[in-house]
Every structure is written in C-alpha cells, then in structure tokens.
Image 1 (cartoon, helix red, strand yellow):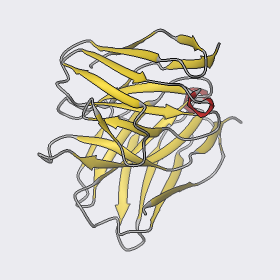
Image 2 (cartoon, each protein chain N blue to C red):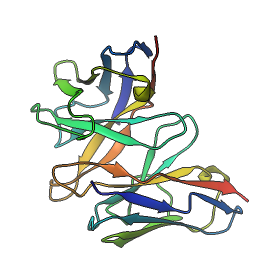
Image 3 (cartoon, each protein chain N blue to C red):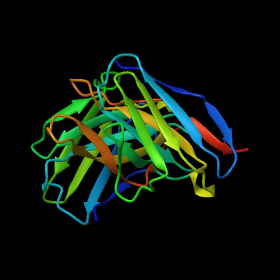
Length: 124
Length: 109
C-alpha cells in the first residue's frame, strides 16, 4: 500500500524559500499513471491546491501561486519536492502531499492517497 | 476559477440519524467531484470520487449523488467516528485547478 511522508524545515524566515520533500513508499513513484501533488491548509481554514507533477516532469500550478512555486521529481529517490519562494506569514500552513489517481479516461485526476502533513511556520 | 460552496457550514445531528451535506459548483464539473473527511490533526481521507463512487474501504453508509453543479453527501446512520469536517472538491477544469469547498463541520447534537 502506497504511503506518503512529508519532510522539511518547520520554520522558515520571511522572504526566504520554503522547501519540502514528499517520500513515496510501498510502490514506485514511476509506476502507474499518477500525478503527484501538494496541498496546504492554514490553521483552522480550508484546503488550497498548490500544484502537481507527473514523473516526466510535466507540471501544473495554482495560478495564484504560480510565480512562486516550483515542483520537481526525483524518481531515483522516489520523491517529489516543493519550493515556494518569497514566503510571508500567509504561507504558514500544514502542507500535504498527495497522489492523484486517474479517472477511466486518464484525463481527470482525484486525490486518493495523502501524507500526514507537515506544519510550516513563517516567522523571523 | 470554479468556486465550490458547501452548506451548511455546521450541521448538528444525533448518532444514528441521517446527515445530508450539500455542495454547489459555480459552473458544471460533470461528475468530477470528490468528498473528503478530515478529523482534527489528520489528513483528509478520500470518501467518494466520481460524485458517487465510494473509495476503497469506505462504509456503505456513505453515499454521494449529483452531477453538474449540485452534489450531496449522505451519511445514512451516523456513527461516533463520522463526526468530522467534510470537504467537496472538483477536479474537472483544464488547465487543472483543483478547488475545494470551505467545508461542513458535522457535530454531535
């Protein structure tokens, strides 16, 4: 059974770059037609999709974050990563990674497996 | 951007009773709609995808319905472990931009 685990610094200074990694276990990140995604949730608030990546390296980002986000994949390590630049206090949140499962036509994808999340605080 | 609106924000129901949660999309998302359950301190868990298909291991008391812009999640007989926050999410648009509703908190009456 595939499991995802987020890792990275829990505290980032304003204006710096937030960097997180999601490690996939229980299966190869390259097997199947999955996308891999990042989502975040500020304390007490709702969920915001950040972006997704395919193992080919193809990416899509939330337009509201696109100018600051980079998602990459390292298939040799079975990992994918998130970088969010120029962070402010508004980027303080729990960050989740998730697997995107294809629908039958392989055109649409839904989030079927989630990591437990990691809390990132932006503060000096 | 497709805006997802859930109602009510909070729903108070007694154990054993039925709960009905609603989700509306600002434009048609066909059947590309998922429901997630989130308990405090935990990640969301997929309950329903394709508007009405239960995910693996989800009890039959959870059911989803709807298409287009109006969707419903029904929990037929509430168990203690069902009290949580529920989110709907669309995955229909291109380029992809997954958007979530603001959540419905299901609490014990």
